[in-house]
Image (cartoon, rainbow, N blue to C red; front, side, top):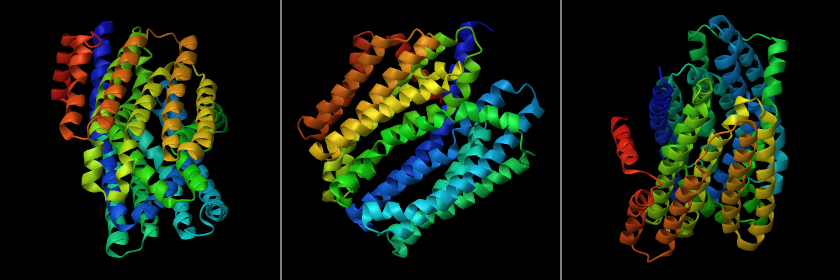
Length: 486
């Protein structure tokens, strides 16, 4: 097989896996997004604000409890293990660590609920946040079965589990919040029950594969944790970039309504995560290890970044432009201002996707400590910006801080990765693609308040890319053929 055909093979594999992951991602994120208008009408801006803070707390807890074990698992399972028996040994060792960490996380979250609610809500919403503990327990455990399915290139089974989690949670939340009028606590109760069911299915997947027997291998556990633990601060820093703004907004403004409006606009960016970023990163996390074995790996990485940015930026532009009309259609007038948050959210997700690509070299050479360092620096800057800009600009300060933090993260990770694993990145093309999509998004949002104007801004993107030579006509036709096949 030639290097070019090998590159096309990897590209097709990424596209195939990303397409299937994308179906699940689109469905899961669509469900989450469609719930927000329901929350808005049933719970109001205050209720949406509480759920936004709740989700950020659960996300942080999962990152801490996860110990970055999926990354270590992929490395030892896909690269270090040489046969089936060694892979089984890696999985069972990881299973023992995952069970212990999940139980510890359950206890820690329960202990943290009282001081957290006292700080943010003067003791209110205690039951809502207490239910975060079982959600963390079950979702943390289920991370291993899902990682196993990704490593085994079984995206359809992966999607089946995640879809079960999403659909069950949605039905339960609608029943508890809308029909039984449980209020915000119905959100956390429904999510807890759905997480337990999903974890049971995940355990069955491991049992069916003959791998449901945790073992303790001190040497392997120590090696995996040595690789993974430096990534935990990076995960926490990632939470700081993505979700810390909601608790900070609550603390600074004392207004659940402001947090609710901001959460609504930011949640709209999940469409980008579903369409482009999440399906790609789920496929990429397992595939780049295989690509790294080929002689043409650096060029494959460079082409991947350019095409990812071209597609993801188009999706971000589309969402930013039509966000105004969608929010007006689905939400009460109290949420009107959230449309101005949508572009910040959308392009933050695009930048995060770019970061996962440019940081690939650091993972390949085993410099996980540098991954953590770059993430910590970017998160520190974003946190400082939040502390300065939120008091001055409110939710717009939070939005600006987030997108600048992700931009800095991508630049720092790319710089450090290039020093350790040189890749011929197409930097100028990347900058032009991002800049063009962002400029057209601003034009759509700040220009005449007319749907035709917003559609026109979207339609300008392809001809400008092709006219400036950033994307050649032959490449555009090739991409369209690939998308039609998918």
